[in-house]
Image (cartoon, rainbow, N blue to C red; front, side):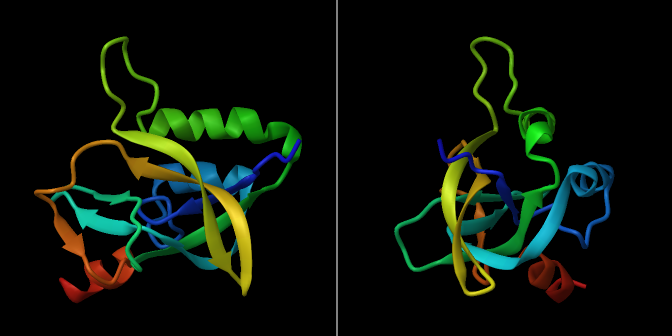
Length: 139
């Protein structure tokens, strides 16, 4: 069985944010490199979200690999909780975790990505697909 043990992050879990969740991430995962995945990035006004697309649009982010394969399931469950996947019955999770192909270091690697699980039609698209670049341009 091919177990996916990589995680692609494009928002607050990127190393430049250094928040509490990143501290957790970096305890269990090692940065593999900068990468990109097909998708669109949006600004909700409070936080970034991303959705899948068939367009030639890409998210810029970081690819991480689990340090200890035996800790993967526990570590990803904690991140699922952080991303709001664990909701009360009848509620819709804000994100969904799905497999995607990430290009990193001239390689195609299957990784988990947290996609926004709600409507993006009224959100501002971040054309560059790069949250760090977008935030720096607003300063």
